[in-house]
Length: 423
Image (tube, rainbow, N blue to C red; front, top):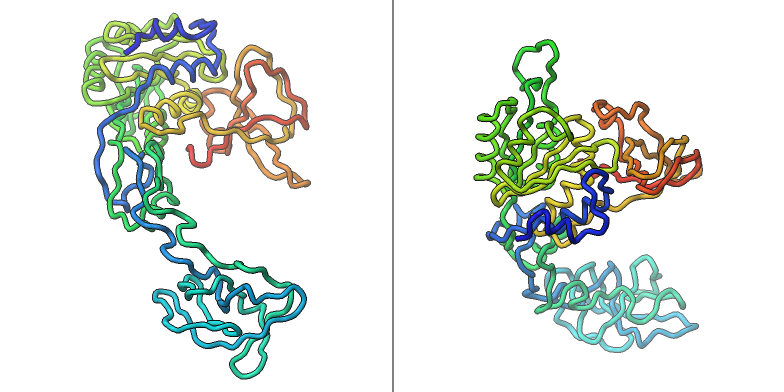
């Protein structure tokens, strides 16, 4: 396990007092190692979990050639380029069982979607493409289909003996359905990542406490809890911890004993006169950064025992932005996901000018919608203060103005990190 100093030495231009956002992602990618414990769980409970090993398909899907349409199955070699084809209907093939008859040239079988293709037949004409041609006969106009149309091949989706899903796949609804299509009642997954979280500060009130002058209710625990729940983490809520060394030490030790990762909010600003930073330093290997970003400049990262530590700023919006930009990808890596990169960015046209100086990454709250011409456009929510939590409710994404980027004119295209699926 490398120390923070060893990781920092591997990063070109590492400067903890002005760390670019991409360097934070790279640092965390080197710091975090995936969990290794695994368990078998019911496929019905697997949504959001991460595969512990490859799933090899025990059968082919579909298991037989079958019809992709309701229509008529026949030997497509009889199709001519210019003349219609007339066929006699000799039976009906239903889904769920094989039709037992024999089909000769000039004959066809009425077939339902999903029914097994009878031997020797390779083409299905949809029912709506045919015309009656007398008692028990159909006509297929010339040029409406080609040989092999509307036939699903055995193993077209999955082939027996080949990997169906790979280790590190985070299972979404489609993957759960795929597992079920293979008849697998259980699936091997990595254990849930345990994340302990607490807020720090004498000014923070828990819900249920009476208001008092100079104090604010703790919103960060609930936004962080929600984001962790979306990831499928096991959350250990340690509440609000006052700025007292003994209480902070107890909270950090309890978190490190129980969790794979620790998240705190507040008490990490450079030069801030409180006990949180001192306790982090005392108990672990911790770096304190000034990140070249807005909002969310101060951040602490490191280890306490075997737990990864993320010390986030105290302002509500800064907590959410730093979580989405840095903590979420790191936790996905901790969970064992193969794809743990930051979420992909969309391009949208800016509906307004935005002032920005090169040298830092800015995340502005934005509202993305379709413009009059159908193209995506984005406008800000207005006040971009890091304490304006209501702006995160109004927004459906973050406008990402990159490190080297300058001011944006109305009509310029910008990158947007959409919230859907993240928050």
